[in-house]
Amino acid sequence: MIKKNTYSYILIGFLLTHSLQAQLTVKKFEPSLLQNHDEVVESRFSTAEIPVFETNAPYSIFLQNGYASAIIRNPSSWRPDYDSMDVVDITLVYTRYPFDKNKWSIGYHYLLNERLMELFRLDSNLNDAHINYHIAYQTGCKNAKEAKNYKHGINITYKIFDPETIERKREQRKRLAAVGIPMQKAFRKDVEAFIKEQGGITDSTVYKIFDRHPEWRKSLVVMDWTSSMYQYGASCVLWHSLHYNQSGIRYFSFFNDGDNKPENLKKPGFAGGIYHEKADRLDDVIKLFRLVMKNGSGGDIPENDMEAMIKAIQYFPDFNELILIGDNSACIRDYIISDSIKVPIKIILCGTKNGINPMYLNLAAKTGGSIHTIEEDIYSMQNSGIGQETVHIGGIDFKKDAKGLYIRIDGKMAGECEQFYDYKPEVKVAEKEKEKEKKQKKLNWWQRLWGKK
Image 1 (spheres, rainbow, N blue to C red):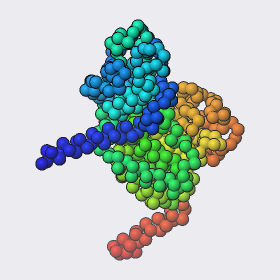
Image 2: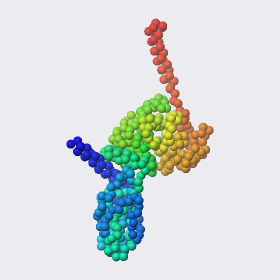
Image 3: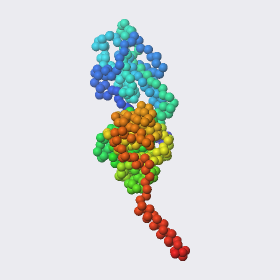
Image 4: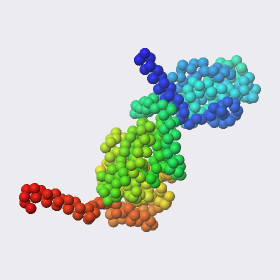
């Protein structure tokens, strides 16, 4: 009985994984479009005429349909291992006889759509907008008898991944198998409800940046989770849930700048309010960010970005990309401890309508990192020239001051964050006096105890 249940769970996990992959794939052909059997489908193919089609690609499988037929005769030939391969091209092979398609014994567009539906019944993952689709018309035949002896079917060409990619794909498959579709839907619904509570997404910065960087793998995402940043952080979590099988995000860290701690007690590296969770624990992620919100919403303008990243690295040391989702309008209170970070920081800046905050530009230059806005990617020492005396970014000119820090030449944002480059909060005089008085009382008590006073 135990063995039977084990097999059942494995089968269910495989089916959920397969189904979820198909659900999150961007489809090339909508099911309703295929059922219409019209010429719109053909417009999504490139076409070519050749005398005879030869299957000479090193990595390819030919699925046989036969003349004027949509049935796949050798379905067992297609047994893909998507952990180790990726489909590149799909070519539907016809014989153009008679040359006028309107004179075919079976409707051309009907046959095309039926062949596609048979293919997608065999493997729904092949209905993918990233795959190149072609139609090859063989024109070498001279009569109907010759035409029937030509190849007719679907040729699938694929590429083999390198060992590192194969290992990553296998990791993704394990994650997918562990997360069922019901949980995915419930999680997504909860995130969308949270975003609605915060007034909805009014800025697609984070979503668009992750969309254009599929190469970010094994990422540790540290995000400002204070009140003005909820929609941006939630956008990241939503993007991860919608792209779960492709997402390179592995870890989340949220910070709320001290759990409502008074500002004068937020010493660099000791403000607190930092929380961590693995990105594949979807249900726990949403519980955690609501807890972070409950425990503190920020309150003052500067934030503890550096402390959050340092603690996140300590908690999740096995990462490839360190990504900070930062508030462009906020200063980094604990910039003074930035020397503790020895890896490049990819800074996703939110709220850059009036230009980039120089403090983040200096952080990117210092760590060899980069800045990413809704419009552009600014890479250190590459296309932007970060590190030079003057740089032009996002339509704004920056120059280095006497301390070697970038400032805006137009003078805007000048001085707003300058104090935080070497900020060391001092304990207020009143608190010092209280501590001194407390120590004196303790000393007086000991002196009285031993009869010395």
